[in-house]
Image (cartoon, rainbow, N blue to C red):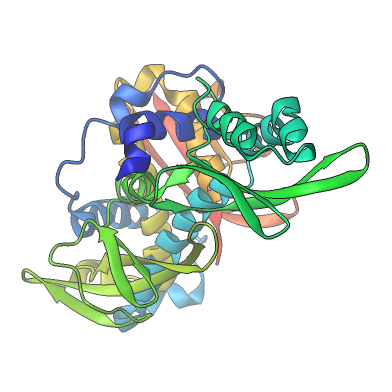
Length: 356
C-alpha cells in the first residue's frame, strides 16, 4: 500500500492513539508490535463473561438474566464490535487531529494564491508540501477547481475522506478532499483493538483484510466458516477516497456454549469487558498506562472508565457517587452497566458500558 509507504502502519497506530488519548502519551511500542495472529476472541470473551457472572452484584440482574441468549449471542457480540469499529472510523473524520489538518489546508497561502492565479504547477507544489510536512497527518489530498483536478497527492488506498471549500477574501477558489488514514492502517487498528478478523469490500469486491482466505462476497448477519472457525459477518459502513461506499466486514467468532448459556445482557457486558481487557493487555506495563487505557476506552466507545485503589483515584475523572464492581449505575443522565476487574491489585478498573 503506497499510503502505508508515506505513513508506516506502526506510526499511524501511534498517531491515532495520540488522538484518542492525551498528547504526548507514548504507548505505540505496546500497541503496534506487528500484525501477529488474531487473538482467540471466543476465549477472551468467555473469560470476561465468566468474570462478569461470577462477581455480579446481588439484585442487580433483571428477570431476563435467567433467559439464555442462545442463538442471539453472536449478534449481541457483533453489535459491540461494530460500535468500536464505528468509533475508530469516526475519529478519522471528526477529531481534533482532522480539524487541525483541515486548518492547515484551508489556511495555506501558497495553495490559495496558486488557485487564485490558476497556476497548476504551484497548486501541486503546495499540495505536496502540505501532505509531506512532518507531524501533519494527511495521507492524501486532492484539490479541484471548476471540476478539474489540479493536484492529487498521496497513497491510492485511502478511506475516510473529508471535503470542503477553499476560500480567500470571500471567494470560493476550489474544493479539497483529504484523509488522515489509509485502508491498511484502519484494518490494523480495528483488528488489534477488537481482536477479530477484518476485511474491506468495495462495490462487492474484496479489497484487503486479515481473514484469509477472504470470502468473495459478504452480507450482514451471514455465517462464514474459514479454516474450521465459524463466524458471523457484521458490516460497518465507511467511505472510500474520494467518494463511494466501502464496507467493513467484521468476522465475529461464534461464542462458546458457556457464553451463549448466559443472558444477552451478560453476553453484551462480557463483550465490552473483553474489549477493555484486550486493550489493557496490550498496554504494558499497565501500571504506567492507566490514564491511556481510560482515554482509549472513552475515545472509542464513549463510555467512561476509571482506575481506583479503594478510595484513591488513579486515573479517570470524577466517578459517580456510587460505583459498584458490577451492576447498573446512573451517571450523566443515562444508565450504564459496570464492568470491572483487578489486573494489578489493589487497583481496580471500572468501565461503564451502554445498557443496550
